[in-house]
Amino acid sequence: MSLTSVADALELRRGKRLVFTNGVFDILHAGHIDSLKRAKELGEYLVVALNTDASARKLGKGPNRPVNTLEDRAAVLGAIRFVDAVIEFDSDNPIPLIEQLRPEVYVKGGDYQIADLQETSIVEGYGGTVVILPLLLGRSTTVIVERCKSDEGL
Image 1: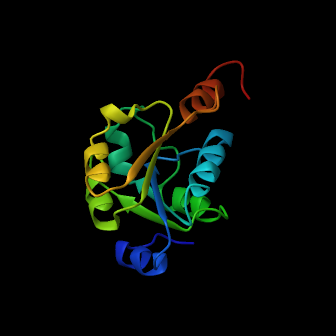
Image 2: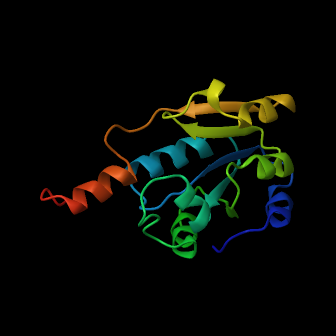
């Protein structure tokens, strides 16, 4: 699957309960898979918004991040059976996409709090729900990158 446009995602959705999440998804790991699987279980159509390389660098995860390009990250995410569409975004947050797609469910990982997300008021304002999924402990791209750089290796 290649990157999908907003118009195509809306067309493919056709009345299905849309679940939306976003992130960098740089080095895919078990924590990502677990979260994406549980997100899909909350609806019928899962859209993943993927930070562009430039917007990922703005997040302050390090000068050499993302490790994988947008195209490679999109290809890997698109190959996951429970991901229905992958859309890129270049803004500081996915609010413009949320306003266009109006997902019934907006999902973020357990490192976020509903009250702290700017997206919450938008989603709840049109009747949607924000869900925070717990993270799998010790699974993060940052931890993986640090282990690779250390003497521990993998």
